[in-house]
Image (cartoon, rainbow, N blue to C red; front, side):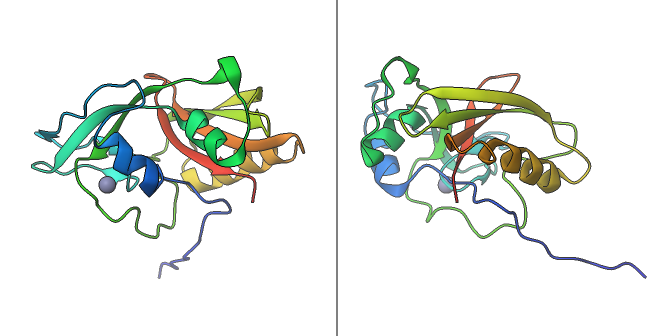
Length: 172
Ligand SMILES: [Zn+2]
């Protein structure tokens, strides 16, 4: 007999907020017009609802500046730390992420970087994470380690190979 244990993640993975999505669906953070297309094979990591696209869905690849968006809310001035990069989003409002028992885009063996920022928006460290057999445990542990430093306000999780932004986690 197998026991099934439901668990929740210790930290919340945040999708691109709805207000930012509304703007990105017109003009992205690099000033380019949003050009939707149909996902052919699917499997594109969607940062609006934190799941992979299915074939046939209308999506767009837009440039997103997560630190700039966060700073606009908090009043931080990240200056030169501001960056933008490509993310996939649904071309239309998708209602955001469904509740999940694990972190988005996680599978054992995947490589992630966790980049830490302080409340001023400056980078204050980071680490490489190879996701273990139970990816949520690896994330929980690495995020606990990041927030053990009282200076850390925010963590960006990125894919190592492409360097692209996956999601952010704020100090609980
Ligand atoms: Zn979506």
